[in-house]
Image 1 (cartoon, one colour):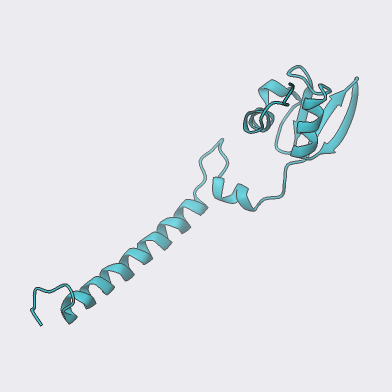
Image 2 (spheres, helix red, strand yellow):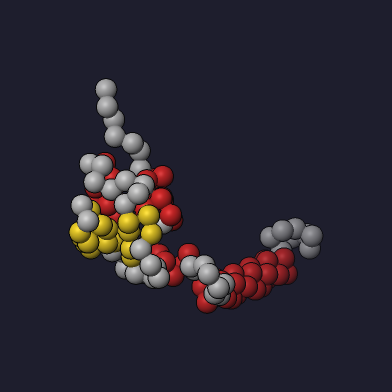
Amino acid sequence: MNENSFFSIDKLVEFGMGFAVAQQMVQMMNHTMQNMHIAGTQNPMSSLNSAPTAFFVVIDGQQAGPFSESEILQLITQKKITNETYVWHQGMKDWKKSEEVPAIVRIVAINPPPFNK
C-alpha cells in the first residue's frame, strides 16, 4: 500500500484523531453557547425547553386569560384582539399594546391570514 494513500494506517489514524478533536470542540462550543447570557436577550437554546407562554389580554375592559399562542391567534382572527389591545405575559414589566409585544407580532407574522374567497 502506498504511504501517500488516503487509506494508509497513518492517514486513517490522523483522520480519526482530527475528527475526535473536532467533536470535542463542537461539544465545548455548544456548552458555551447554551450557558451564554447577553443582557436583554433570551437564549434561543433555553427558550426551546421552556414552558409555553401564557398571555393575558384586556377584552371589553376586562382582564382575560391565560391564553396559549393558538388561542391568541383565534382571538386575533375573531378581531377580539387588535393592535390596540393591551397584552401581558410573564417577564413583562407592564401591560403593552399588542403591536408593541414581540411575541404577539411573531404569532401574527408566522401564521397566514384567514382565507376569504
